[in-house]
Picture 1 (cartoon, rainbow, N blue to C red):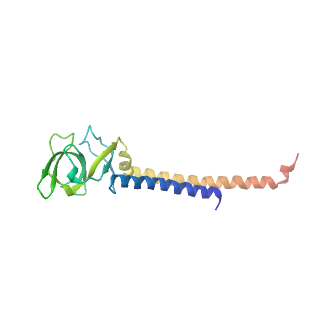
Picture 2: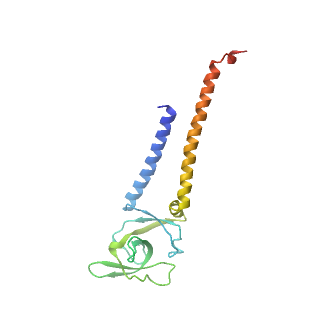
Picture 3: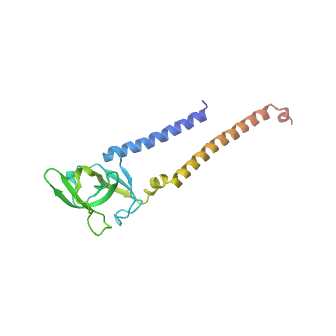
Length: 183
């Protein structure tokens, strides 16, 4: 393996290690396996805007207080995650329930108390508009763009190698032809 190719492999491995280390560090710091979410509604404006990227941390539901912003499974559709503020807490003795409301909504959520088992975590912080990127990359246009970029990178890689190979061959031929030795 040539030293250039070996260097490329090491660079790719180093980049993968850095990204993997960042992800593992984020998972460890937040205590959850899915710490990042893109906000897709305007229910929490002006606190959290549509397309913001939020980072959540695992939390013991017993430590949550009124005013905390949580991510939870919708009581009406468990697969849907919602980001709302706690406006009330109900303690039935055996389980906590959270009354939630979006900051941009006029009244609390209609589904009643969110069971503590539905809570995924508490919002640690948000990054403005960064949530648009994962949403866009899952769209048809985003997938097409990524596929096009991948094909372009592959073509550039092969084209670059052919030009390098031809240049090296040309140099070697120039070194052995008698014309290069003329005064």
